[in-house]
Image (cartoon, rainbow, N blue to C red; front, side, top):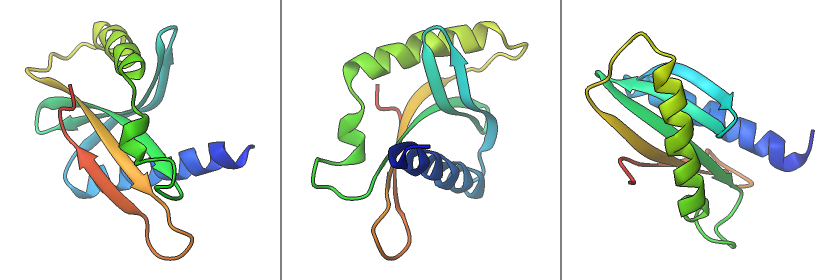
Length: 118
């Protein structure tokens, strides 16, 4: 496994734990279809939160959230439509969140949760 893959998986675990601790229920992780992957799909008190997780070791190349491009958001929208079509449940609200995880060489990871980015 490449170091960037391991860092990404670690960031997703940190994000999932954070979401669970804030009261969200994780419905899916790393869900894939032909349109792409949804990192985390969660129920936030009845609202569907589709979360893109970006993890970085430093801010030298910009913040993790800055790595979420319009193309990535469009892929998330298409993949979410497929995910929703396969569910038996209806969600009154669907939003797209970004969870930016910065993992310094020392100390605890920093988490920034940007809600409803689109």
